[in-house]
Image 1 (cartoon, rainbow, N blue to C red):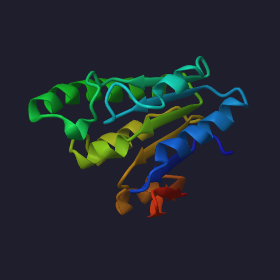
Image 2: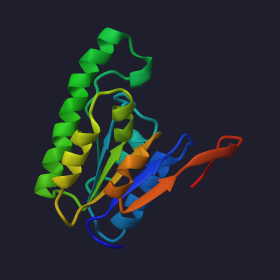
Image 3: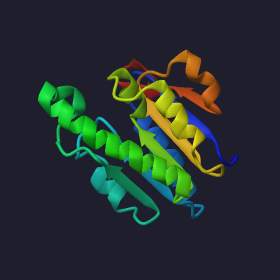
Image 4: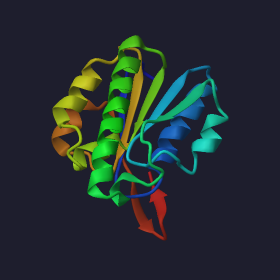
Length: 167
């Protein structure tokens, strides 16, 4: 695996987070340190408790305070969570600059574009500030075509039948 890669795993299909976690666990076996920051999923995720058992090699962070996913919140609740999400983005910047991990997963960060919480320029600036040896994995439903040059690898996930993901 090349160092310093930017990978994108996107699409409407299920399995994007699982694919990112799978890549990270494979790297953890080789004594790599992983940080995963989840966005738009609420403070509690189904896989969160399991992933926390993988510490200290695999650390999971969510800056959102409400348990519910972002898209189910009332407008005033969304405004409060946007401030928390911005804290998560600031933490991601710090992790990238300091190089405190080998792999950084920004789970559903592309969804922040969909909701207008961050701009493409903010994500590009974030990626440009990363430690050169760090691998970054971005996930989300939509990856705009004009962002293709930003990534070294792009994987599209789609459901074809019965909710099973094709990666």
